[in-house]
Image (tube, rainbow, N blue to C red; front, side, top):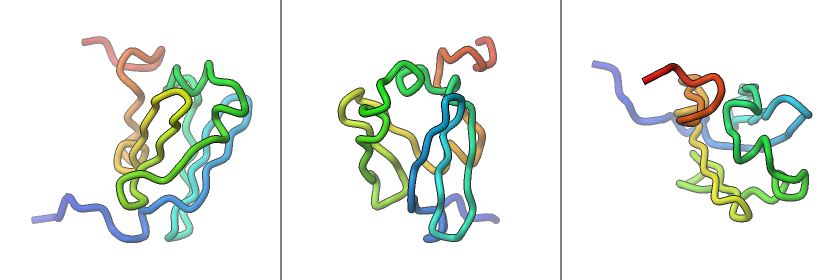
Amino acid sequence: MASSFPSAGERVKDVRFTDDTISVDLLDGRTIIVPLAWFPRLLHATPGQRENWELAGAGYGIHWPDIDEDLSTEGLLRGAPAPGSRTSAPA
């Protein structure tokens, strides 16, 4: 049976933004790039609010205190958009 625990390499190293994407660099060398539209709070945040992020969950998550947004590397690796985002599947 496969373990559901994240590996140590799946911790966040850095976070960057373009106008349309968020890129998360992991300690194991991978980079996850997803549409910013998946995360409406980040999409509508100012550049300063986006840049004010901190590690959460022992490095397996990212927290933006200015907009109360949290993402996990597990969710990003699964390709899971925020509930209610324009790209979420209908319920």
